[in-house]
Image (cartoon, rainbow, N blue to C red):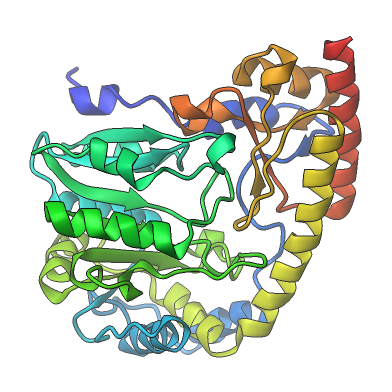
Length: 385
């Protein structure tokens, strides 16, 4: 049977493939999947239960519930000073991942290019490929804090380039891009008439830094698709509620794809998201404080065992270099799992530029982190002796 060549060209997710092995083992301490270990706060779950009891089980507008769009628009304006009309500039999606897929289908012709700094989340390049485009990566490493220089971005621009994809705080590195660097990249987009796609899913999970919302920068608003969601900040991964904000013409094009692909996001999850927007701030801040404590513990432990680790400024991942061990990322992760029962993600799952690193998620308990670090330290000593 025939399978599309563009589908066959994309390998299965390196994360999921690796954790198929984990699921078959006992007593594994996982620093793997990027999912909060917190249960969705009760007030948010209760709002969903209440909505079901009241019979909210129908379709919504393709754009999503207007009340939710209004709350999101008000939050973006309050937090970043950026105004979006909830009537025609906000679209509720099935997670931020759907929003990213929608924009790729809305802007790309076959063969068009999207520039993506790497290492990056595993879904970005496949989203470009599935829409008929070609991802063009700009490599970063720990010596630059995993940040691309604007001149490297511009050097990757060709006549087929349609967009620059940015995601900060970054998964897997935890990097946060300074405002002046973002502005320089915006200026490049203006110069070459490019879209900017900004995935801000970790914007609330930031430590001692100020997050810059790209559409707030001069020259960025009309050309930026702002993507965000509820999965990370509110511990709502399984609820699958995200959103996109953009100029009306582009958002309408995205909505058309969304309309025929999924119709709308589930109404009961949207009702839960409304409660999160209204009353979830304190719960979110409590989780961020705990992530920050875990961050300090894991980074100190990794550096102490000889694995050089840049301090992440956002998200909930550490991305230590394992080059000193002489092992590849996959060898390190597989041996660590089999010999010490600690699961980390090989860095090359996030692109070729991730080779020589592993991702350690600190979205797990202090106790689990301590156990994992003890086992990992023992493993590093053993392979280094």
